[in-house]
Image 1 (tube, rainbow, N blue to C red):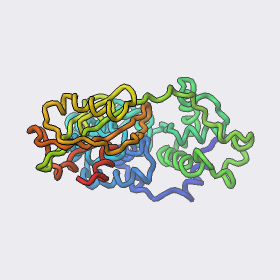
Image 2 (cartoon, one colour; image 1 turned 45 degrees about the vertical axis):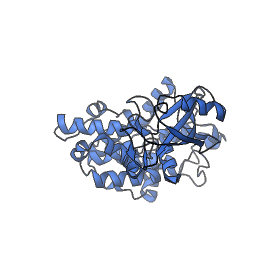
Image 3 (spheres, rainbow, N blue to C red; image 1 turned 60 degrees about the vertical axis):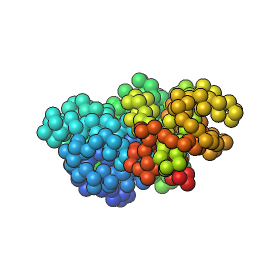
Image 4 (cartoon, rainbow, N blue to C red; image 1 turned 90 degrees about the vertical axis):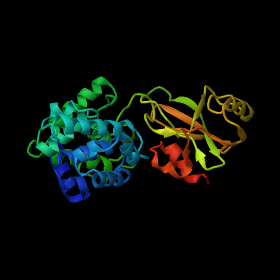
Length: 347
């Protein structure tokens, strides 16, 4: 059975009115696809609209600074996407005269663009026959055809890609790709899929064998690493604080944060106070007081690590020249965890 015809029929009747579906501009399709990686439509929509408003063309995006791009991206997570977005825009503007590659192989050479994004742009913008395979497509194909190969194994990835290309509607691959993703996102959902009614009820292996919750199969990953972060919110009598820029590699690359003391394990409050006061950041300062903002660590979960964060409010007589006015703090791109604290704390 080929799923293209029923999927397209369902899509015609149920598709959402989304702004990137009214264009074949590769810049806007690329932008939407990068934003929607690891992100649901309702969360990504405001970011897409903000980027199109601020940077209507790839040349506008290329002309922005990385900090401006990161600031606009703030809160969306997976910040490497934003850095790659900016780097790719600069490459296209400077090396390709503002014109995107018009084929799958050329698109695949762009920084931050993998098989999925290249397939989406090639099919939607240039009507080329490349099937997309994302979490939604894995779910639909594994359930309809009863495929138990793990989707995060080399065998599974190859198998699903071949099957996806077999199902592709070659007369309108772009619409088909959008249709199967939409079907997976809104109908064949991870939990509580709409199996009745469903265009595949009579043919869906998972539905007919009562194995919906078991598919798709994904091999278990290693347990996430635990990290213990202690942020020093240093405040002067004259309304200044300190932000530091994170390294260009690792989590939150090139974003700003309060000075950080990371420990290997969870420590008592008294131990942490001693460590903080002996840190390179606080040693040169005349510290007036130090207090814990949150005694229970805030747990911030990333894909491969869990962060246990505490914020320490430190009053100091004066701060070094590298300090900034508290009134300027919202100008800096910061991780969601820091943003949440800034919005809550009564500076």
